Length: 391
Image 1: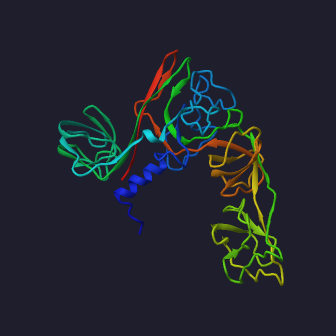
Image 2 (image 1 turned 30 degrees about the vertical axis):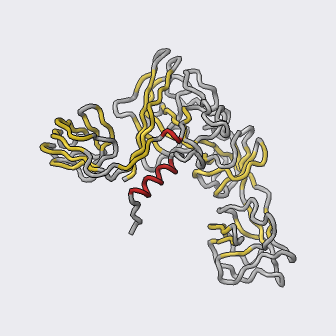
Image 3 (image 1 turned 90 degrees about the vertical axis):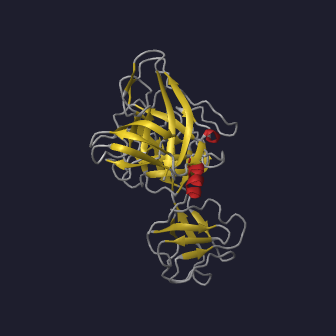
């Protein structure tokens, strides 16, 4: 069975996800998208989804500076620079996070079968996004998605005609961010929704541009020798490195382990114990790793080459295969080591070689219920109040 996350666990989880502690991970950036995209569980950023309103006409314009007034980021911390990125950088400390108790509110409701909205009158208490909803005609597991005066938008369709007393229950942890406004200076097409990404400082010359980066073999690490041996026992799924300074430097999960006949092919690091210098691996050793035979191992990985990437260790990005690449695992990665202005490694360690396309990650996404909203004139605005809930 799955672990239960109690209210206090939900509270701390949201604080971490939204960077309310102002430490790690990075703050979130609020971005708009002009692709006709309905957010779904399996969504990833791409050339056809979640591209931003850099130009008019609902086209992917990554690689060029915005001419619509879509803003570059204004930094709100001295220790994190995002001036090359687009969107609105959120301040983690401004999220209001709380868990509602029972009961929250009740009222008299009406609504049609199959609809996602209900009308509420004579409300006692306050209805909030994330509240659980129950009553005649309310679908199982329904929650409040949006409150628009007396109209309540639900997360599931009504199972029948809604009537009588409707109850709104607590036990839902919700984070709310103050209203943010995008003000445009020129036409930008139709804006379909918005999403939140981990902040990074990739410039427009790289962000979302097909084949703007490439994966190449990184410098192979050798760990262990006859003086400071790596030790492994046949049948075990771990290797212990010598107790010497900096032995664990640059090691991360996902690296390919080799260079020793005791290590089966396609063996990778799946866990690390830094204090005890242990590398946990996915395959059992077929022989002992010892001074008498061979006391060293190699660790292989791929690095990313991207000219003037502006990324720093800890940044989160989404890496997609490019046109000449079929071997790299497409996923979200964290920047692990920055070698110079043009190359870096990731955690988990990257695999494969060939062209890559780099995007911002997607943490949360929502399509406007009444959208899209057309941006046609200088001064047109879109205002967004953010709500994120766990139940």
